[in-house]
Length: 529
Image (tube, rainbow, N blue to C red; front, top):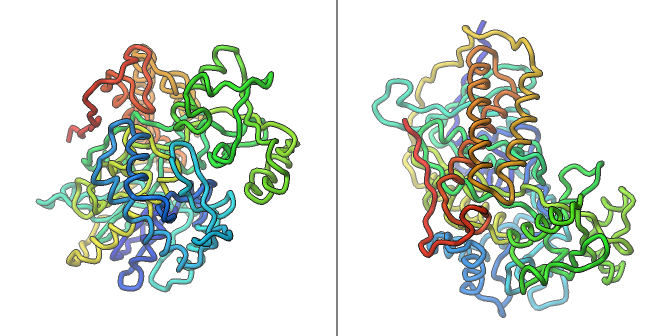
């Protein structure tokens, strides 16, 4: 019996982070929107974001300065047009959030809002809500998404695959929607749409240690690749330098802003080490700080290093970093008196699905926004707090393009066919392959790489892909199987991209190619089909 359900909307948005929710709200007054999320509406990387949103708001700052800082961090690979487009949108994006009711931290300045400074920024330009900016933004927008009559919400649903018109025998390639698994009922729904948007986030869960939520499994990147879209710069995975190191603290980030406000990185004996690695010390871009920590940990066989902000007053720390203060205190660490143990962890996928400045992908009717996209903004290394700004800039651009595009009449789509598959015999295969993939990527495709390590990783990934494809072909889909299938494909794209780059640049550091080439070129992969 086939329990598939078919429905049709104007716009199907896969993902409920800042990119997905802001787009839904920009469209819903005149379009019927379906918002699909793997867990709940507030379960996304956006809601975990601590630091804030970079934008030119202070009269002492300038667009040129923000662009210059972004280009510097991006190590020669940022697209200048995309960078200026995003930076130019900063004021409008922040005003849009404030008008929506987001309560950013205020102060007595002429601007009326407190701006902090983070690594790589030459100015204080990061507007924030204490140290839980993402949570405040998501809480505000989620309430409005839930209340909007034109937004149909599908919680506990995961996209299986996009629907390409050519696979249905139609002459023109076009995205017609997606097959979506209801993870509660186990039924696959067919959701047709005139426009489909990937806002599925990054792929941090491909690594053993990550600051990302469990949902960050590269779904949008993998699905776009399977329908023929190019991906770019997948080798540039940003490792956040400071993830809390504690057996009971899963994926808890120690914000960049802690270093921006004077936090000092120290070895266990109290020695400060960053000035030996870069003249900007703790305020160097993340790739440099992460590599320095990795170097010191390997050199001395350390489990972690420490970030010390005890020289600031307890009142200052409780006011500016209430979330970090409270979480650390729960674990027995009083940050007003003790340094915080930290390690680098996979944090942000700088590459992704290739898009233009309207967020369009290579497949007509398919858009990509947020971390799943490669817009050209981040280059070889993302500047701190540019990611939420990118979400807002490209959700606005996508909305404008979707609203300006003539509506496409609904196409009758085939229902999901699982007549030739059975229930899985051993789910343990999935968990074993998941663990093996993440350990392999951490060991061989981490902060420092070699050609031999990449070769070993690709060999293991090829074997895992064969196992997973066979499993996918023969058994009914499940949330874990879909994520693992997407994760192993994303890992393949990361390693393949890294093998293509015969230099060290930004987040990609190779011992076999330690020099940076004079000519900066993107790594663009094209699907074979």
